[in-house]
Length: 572
Image 1 (cartoon, one colour):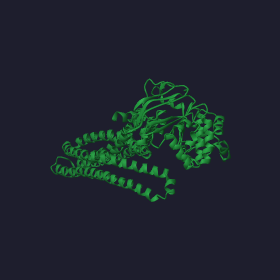
Image 2 (cartoon, rainbow, N blue to C red):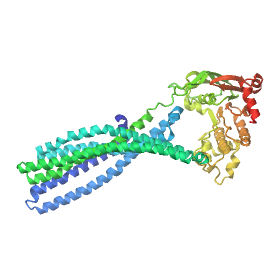
Image 3 (cartoon, rainbow, N blue to C red):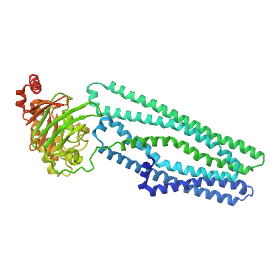
Image 4 (cartoon, helix red, strand yellow):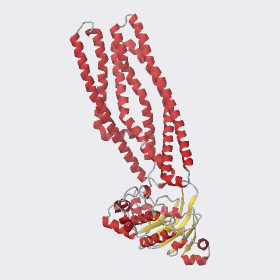
């Protein structure tokens, strides 16, 4: 893990080196004061050399001015380096998230992912900036200050040094507990973020069902877990800091007692004793810095571990010898295909389907039967447990994911639109398209006139998830997006089931035009919308129960006829 962390420093070698040199120079300047103090007490003041006293004072002032500039550089450029590293980590995580399979998002809430990209990476930034500075510079300062203290009085310096093992023992024994506590605290923060993201996204549903109190209750549950986790984290941190502070205070007591005895026994002069008392802080201060640094160190390490967990999640599998497909024709075949999610029971069981080029093929059946799963397998969103799916005789696993999905257009019941302009949402189908092509796609989807009625036309921002549009308008934008993409294969997954009957009829005309000349797989709840399909397959309990045309299946008087007659009686 350390090697992976250090790799993020490579693009910033120059600024890192300068930051370390500035920190080292600043630490060395800190050593000047006790040296000057000793010189004055032992020589300049007793000999009444006032000119050198003033000269030393002015020189010390000049060094402190230089130190101020060094500190500015360290704080500014050091943090900028940390921010750049954070940006690179965030970029790496985002790029990797784009490659992860659907199953990852099935098992990880959006808010928790966002927590890893914000809170955790901020902690990593602090570690990236202050870590080397505190560890390397403080360690060097401890060594140099110990050497200097030894020049004053070696025995008194050794007595002080004997307290260090006790400090190391206490800090190491409490560090592990603090690390575990902060990990739980971060998990609690992630849970709050997930709850917050879910509640805010669903605020309209919450208000419609007057469930604000329930949402508050769920949020407070996570909030309470956060408070408890934070309590444990800060309790561990309190034990760590209080115990280590106690040991560092022992340093001062030891200096006071041992130095006093040495002075009484004539083994040290009063001037050297005074200089030692002043100088001992040079030894204690970096040790204290290292101790205080443990808090941000634990935060940063925990954050980096959670960051690595995401990066180590395997991306969507793609064969190394996978080929990029040009424009496919659209002959789709399922051969003994079975599928299950995350080791659960099989959703599809030995499915066999043959869908010809340009054919409209409908999948119907009870909810949970496996219709949508079958559709998700065509663009390779999920892995099959067994069997294979081919397009134009080529196993989809032998095609690159990008080229496979470029040939497939999807219109779903749950439309996702981005919080950007209408034009940008349509362009999602093909970013290389011209304005004329965008307008033509909107016309074919039957939404151009509505767009032009808006004050800002195609530049109108539609809000998060298209909140400023009606259900039918959202669906038309999605259809326009697919028109622009112009794929040979089209999947309609209950594309109109959430619409009212009048809007559905209007949208259906656009969908019928969209289907022309394409291989179309339709998942439908309302059987009246797929009567004209070339073939219909009834999927129930993960198996193909029936297959045929609308009229043939009605004559068969099986499951399809039962579903159709039931909907006909209900007026659907």
